[in-house]
Length: 300
Image (cartoon, rainbow, N blue to C red; front, side, top):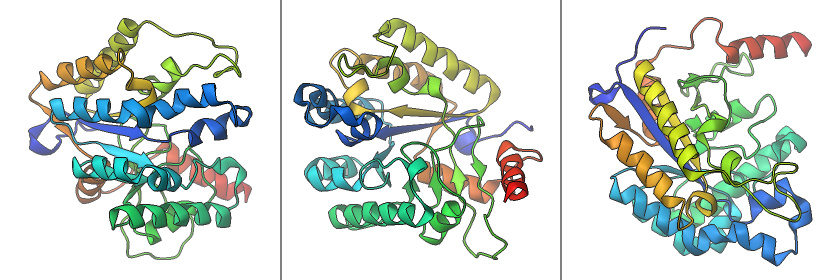
């Protein structure tokens, strides 16, 4: 792989993403929480306190980010979503209620996408350009559908340290540019470290609240490596998790550490996708997404 030179002559790129799911994400993950007000309050904390703390931290370090907001959250917290938008952060689509795409047909996935877009358009006056599947998957044909709907980028899959293109699911010639994926890494998310509920247990079998110092050290260590290799560092946060009174300083210290360097390009997902589409011809030969596509075609 040739070393990339990012915009602004930067050595590496950073995209900060935030999932504002309110109670809907945990209800998809753990349906037994329905009706348990104490447990639900853990996830409702994002709207109560976390969103504003995350916005303040991003403003302190002059970082524009990309937020994924399910349609139902846009409806129930319209003023809060407008406040995020007013701070010039990007708003992306995450379905209507953080649906589990593993359980949905292509037609059902389209329906929840449309429902999410309609809600965002009603609140913000425009459609989302980015998409995140809550559970990270979708069925064949959905990537082409997203392109046809005007979506330019996703941050749902994994498998690389750089953006890549989703291959067309059919041989139909399209005039739209290919869908760009900004891949995630579990170690660059707050949820695997900090998600916790006592009863019902979330996550099952892993009752722990780790050292904030060690999580910050992990993120700094990963960023240093992404910077060294000239990669795209995609952070995934949740306001109810990173936005507590203590944990918000983990984010602040990470951003301060990154901002010390003058060769980092901070971009929204849409900005990254636009630059990637203009600057990169295609995926590297043998890229995992191409291997996956060939395997899928072979078994169909």
